[in-house]
Amino acid sequence: MTAVQPPERPDESSIPDEQWEAFLREAAEDGGRNAPKEPSARAWMVARRLREQDEAARDQAAEGNGRRRWRKRASQPKPQSSLPPGWRTGPAWREMNGRSSRRRTVGSVIGVVLAAALAVVAVRPSLLLDRLPGRDHPSRTSAAPLPAETALPSGAPGAVDDAGLPTRKDPFLGSPAQRWADGADAIEVPPAKAVGWLSQADMAVALRRVKEFLVGANLDPAVLRGGRPTSVLALLDPQQKHPDELSDLRRSLRTPDLRYDPLQLVTRFAPAQVALAGDVVKARGHMTFSAGAAGEVRVHADYTFVYPLVRAGGKDGGADAAVARTIIRRDLTIDLLDPRTWIATGGKLTVRSSESEFYNTECDVHDGYFHPVFPDTAPTGAPATGPATDPYDRSKSVTDDHSKGCGTVTRT
Image 1 (cartoon, rainbow, N blue to C red):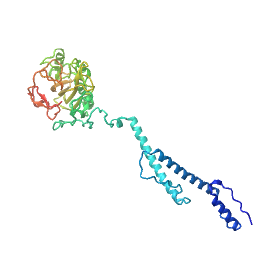
Image 2 (image 1 turned 120 degrees about the vertical axis):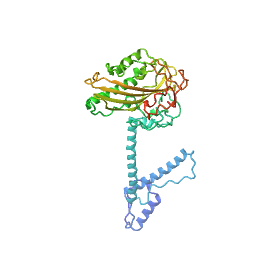
Image 3 (image 1 turned 90 degrees about the vertical axis):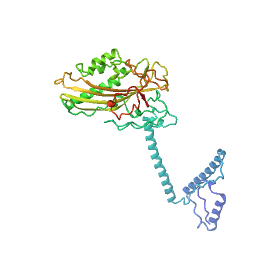
């Protein structure tokens, strides 16, 4: 009888003694001819590893029950075996690998999107920060700016939803001017073309000078603080006689009064009393040009400017300081005269007509400055006797009514 030597096993303790004795007994009975084959070393190792995983899972479940006593559960499920059905076959593993691959793909896409989002936020953090609850926004109406005006509108702008009074932090709160362009950017020069005695190139230069005049008279910070409008004086034709605007303007700047008032052409505020709330002035309007008489081209400009103001001298100068808005509408016709036909200086401007409307300023004060009335104080000038007017209504020409007088405003 041939003795059957037990094969070397990867781990003596991995097979129960009862199974091993049964194996030897069967081998001895038939002389080793039909002895069951010992599983390969790889099979032993796989079986051992899977049992160790099962034991680790049971140990982890038991440990987890100790860490999570605060969470109530109806019952604790038994740890599932690591041996899947058909573990020696391929399809179940391929199915699991497929699910794992899909999870990796989704994770990769999420990672790319997250990285791109973080990059955008790094460049423009306001995209995230502006949406945080309680964050203070510069303006509560962030509607898109209005398109450029090319002609007078058909009616006044509607009411603005924002409630409350304007502040230094948000000086255009509650005003239609929130959607207007800022400062000089609002004065858009129309495309130049040859007209009258001017070529296209000459017309382009002339239109730029008209814009410089409007900016110097209504937006120059030094002039707004009560300074002398040097650039405006330099653009005016010293030979013009219709009317004698240059000499009149110079006199009005020296000794302003009811007849000689620089505010007919220039916007100025008393620096000892008020200052701009920030550095933005809103404006809206349009500019056109056409041929006039022989050797004459006329440029018509109609613009409304909105000035937010606070008290000067540091008084009431906090972020929530009271803000007054003064609104000025200018309607100008400027002549470009051919020196070969007219008594004129080439390259200079002649003011043919000037019409203005002033809103939220003291009545009958002629000291060369505008004096806004703040929402927390009462007017101190002459009483208003004219009709109530909406300063944002640009649907009518300034020249439609010359007898309005000094009235009240329906809003600022």
